[in-house]
Amino acid sequence: MLSPIASTAPSAVLISGARVLDLDGDVHRPEETDLLVVAERIAACRKGMGADLDAGRTLPELPAGVPLERLSAKGKLVVPGFVNSHYHSHDVLLKGCFETIPLELWVLSALPPAFPKRSTAEVRARTLLGAVECLRSGITTVQDLATVYPYDEQHVDAILKAYEEVGIRCVFALQVADVPGVKSIPFWDEVVPPSMREGLSGAVEPFGRGMEVVELVESAMRKRERIHPRITWALGPTSPERCSEAFLGGLGDLARSRGLPIYTHIYESKAMTLMARQGHAKDNGSLISYLQRCGVLSPKLTLAHSVWMLPAEIRMLADAGTSVVLNPVGNLKTRSGVAPIRPYMEAGVNIALGCDNCSCSDAQNMFQSMKLFASLAAITHPEPGPPTARDALVAATVSGARTAGLEGEVGALKVGMKADLSILDLADPSFVPLNSAARQLVFTEAGRSVEHVMVDGRFLVRDRRVTSIDEAALREEVAELMVPLRRDLEAVLSRNQKMLPYLMEAHRRTWETDIGLNRYIGAGNG
Ligand SMILES: [Zn+2]
Image 1 (tube, rainbow, N blue to C red):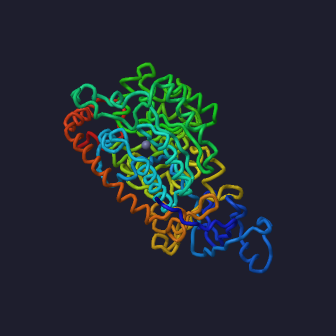
Image 2: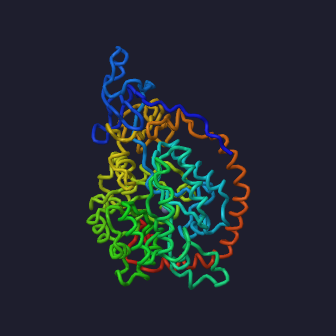
Image 3: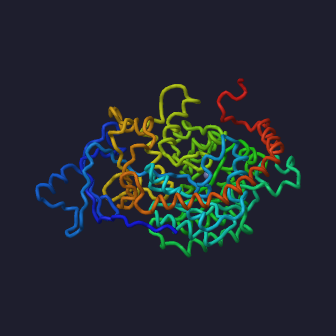
């Protein structure tokens, strides 16, 4: 068992002399200022607080008797903690296991329904390790769309307790569906021989009939809400084509009655989009129309990926106030194409950023996501223009907070907001010379400069080490857990190898079908 090591949790911290990034201010040369954190919130952000204390003066924002830690941070840059708006904790241990393979093949190789049931110890360790990776690169909030399959209440508890132990902020959603995965991929039913079909699965499989699953999710949430102070809940229908109308409607009712965000995957690959065209004639092949008809197209809805979205659908999202969360690294690694970044921006759709799964991206690193987001619009829009470096930072912070239901609480360093932040070393070569903090954060830095990370006013990373858990003990535990996991992965890959000719045939048929949209530059041009 891991034993948490004690972390110093001062009641107040004064970070003095650092450049503090304000996305509403000068993002290129942020001013040197002082930042006072009292309990879990930012109490003051102004120059001269350190000097006042040195001169024996008191700070009006610091309640008498509260112990104060002082951190001299000249030569550092304080940035808001990143919000990783699309993340899955269930395949953390499979990073580096796959080359770039098509999405549908990767799902069959990496996601829980393809594997025998995992141990509670493995579920706990993978959740901790994913959170550690996030924290070490300056991510302070994760939106975990977790597959717990086969469903087990102990596994839900293991995940939530792990998040509580490590201390990262989490919006937790159980990934659910009521349509089997085999029914959601074009041509699988036709080309894969019946004897092999039990090996075909999706990101999650139904736990029961539609409304039973809605009740199960509500019950799981009710039992645990308010137990974990930094964990809030969201709903996670895996993707619209995997959810019946009654099921989505039931989740929508639950979301409205409880004020919950809803996360789902949409139009990630061409196959998912073709499925919409083939299976949703009633909605003219549009999953956005389907979501609207089911009553869930609203500002509470966030659509992950949204690569193969039509222009008319983008306008519908803007009108409904629905957000998208783009995952450019994972989309490239799964050969899924590039999202229409500029059209989303021009329509005024709220855009957040995510790092997606550990085995399809394969890094929990918002610096990578920001750089690709800011760069990839160039493949469709050769003229200069947005997204700028500041746009990428906004997507990784403020816009992500909106999708998390934490707008005004996290995502910026303003008085009254939660103290979720990172302190970066400006002596790192990434920032020498300092020409533009925003551009060097987005285009130069890769995470090397992250020294300290605070969540809820508590340092969870101090001098590049996680303070809340014993990382060395976690590494040892993971090494033991990898023995059975590697054995099971080999069995999964061997089964998939036998199905490969059929899966590739289904893939080819998908590619030969015109869906009225292309998200690959140069496709068909040699
Ligand atoms: Zn995902």
